[in-house]
Image (tube, rainbow, N blue to C red; front, side):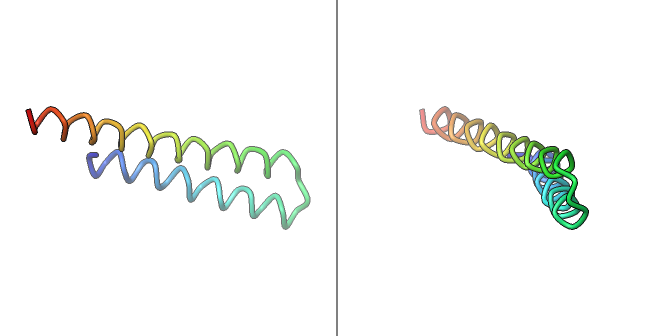
Length: 62
């Protein structure tokens, strides 16, 4: 996984956590939902990059 892709995934996850927390504080269910969606996006990016790494490692072993 490139450092840039990892940073984007982590940033998305952190942004989602912050937005969800803000929704908790303000009682805004839309902010909470958007925060959870951003976190899911970050996790999906991480999973995709992990898969790319595994495929690359497998190919390199051949």
